[in-house]
Image (cartoon, rainbow, N blue to C red; front, side):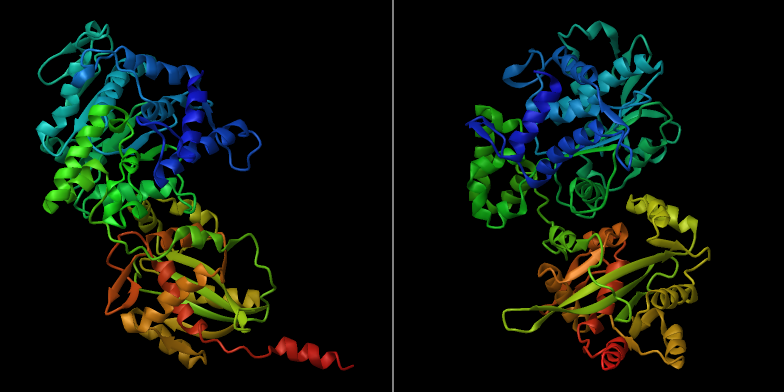
Length: 593
């Protein structure tokens, strides 16, 4: 069987939670299933790449995939009952590592993936994978590209950085590859290319501008308080650089592994969120939230496979986890460590996400089913970040001809959104911080650059008025948070527009925040494809106060402005009174002749 066929079989087994035996169980978490589906979808995209509207320039190279399997077989296990034996990659390891090397650019032949993020519970051979990749890169890849590779391992302390480095040393013991490398205390050097592996210290992260890493391994990234080492990997000037992150979950949700990488990578996998990165490989093995909503569920040992794709496949591994669980069960103080390290759960992660993105995505339509000409519109503004992103939202209430179970007409809400940013410097800053393509969103027409030092509120208002005039929408109310828009509100009011203040308090926003989500879940919201709005919706989290909720602006560094603008408009749209439009009156009058 080819490597490709093995991976296809593996992916389908995971998608269907196939159980073969006590030690071979493919039950998988949601995110790993997304990774499997991404692989299968990419195969289809590759097969049809010449007829796709958006080109997919990657092909599967069976020979390159086989090479990494053969490479690990020439290295040796260094610990446990398999010490000294060749390393035979497990199905889950093949799924991850063969994709790193099997997917190639059709034209250049270079590796598709420039970054890799893998999150899995401890004792699932993370260091072994990292060390084997590092050795492969400084030898096979460096030779292939005719370069001298600098490869670095980075932990929060020198001892942590040394774990992968020392593992690479041990894997070469008894290996037929040993003679190809020179090993000293601080370097593993490939003799032919003079490429090397070196463990970094904290000072290297702070003053590492002189390095040119062809590869950087961030070990246990959940422990890193800053992104200094991550940023070091962005400066590579080699043909096929690789930034590799393998980590377990952590207990500090302020560190960049959780706030940035885990959140972003989860969105790459999630088919209901419009965030793509074809050059970033992602796989996450963890328990699903519903698995531990009732803490007693974690006694179900089958669930442990989700976070332990290797450790649960042999008797000793299962017994170790079982022992840790029994201790944690008796000593509650140890339960947090068990959940984090053995089941790969971000224990402090709060259940405060605002929107179920699968339900939000179901509200997206290819076209609005009615002609909105002449209809009433409520316009919401988020002017809170004049030097950053500003957003407007248009909500059109629509009384359908359907009724609910009480015989009342069903009201739907049509949503449009547009955002503004002052200049290209700010756009690039946000692009780096949020890791999404604001450039593309500008080209697609979802974002306007006003080319000013701050967002020009007059330009925003001009866009709103011209859009309403073009679409022949009747402006019912302009809805603002008065904190940053007092002047423009006064001017518009003087011009005869109905202007309403929407204060950013729990009391003011609770009904709108809860009500809009309820309408989404009932399928009563419609919107056209808008990746910027979708991105903002996926970022939104709620803050609760005495049972009241509102969007928490301080909980995320990612943008939520389009959501704020939408809820601002919905607060008034919710109370829209339906009367006959002037068009209906005219039509009725003409029908009398």
